[in-house]
Figure 1: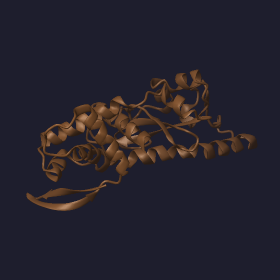
Figure 2: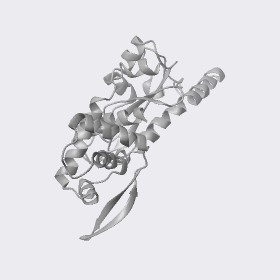
Figure 3: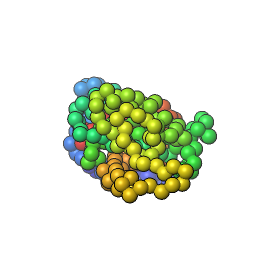
Length: 261
């Protein structure tokens, strides 16, 4: 899906072509969602353009000023289009209690990633030592082949895996639904239906059978990385310049869009 945006550099304005790397059917679906909600309002941009604006914002990590220049609208109008669409998409995001019921997987994969963010209130809580950058913790739940089931709301980046799983009630919900979960060593002690690799104790090496189990576990668990590749394709999650609550809304909006594809 292509459109023409405008670059503003040093006070000079010049048009340049920009491509939106999303299926045309997805843009049409967002267009119909906006029309159903707002109707055919008398405004300058067509409904299809009103759908493209909120998709360009997170997909390309574009500023409101560039959106306004590219679509020849005011900055306030660009902000209104983006926030309105994000609210609509967030409301359609499935909760974790419903998402696995629809997918009905034999088991699920759970893991987390750090989405870099520069607007943090408590710098220490948002600075995980492993990633060595400020960010937020987002969990993903997928089926065995890596197809997305659910993205979690954002938590401070320093939140460890087991705490995040309990905060989002992943442990409790999967146990109630009798869904086995494959997770990494950060989830040791989660209980429920969680299955994690063996850890070495007091420096003692793993037994041959334990090492074999860990290798098999790693082979089964690696498809969860597909969910994070899809999340980071929305470039705003590579370095967001919004608050923690805004990142949560964006994550749920992207969850709706990715499950629609």
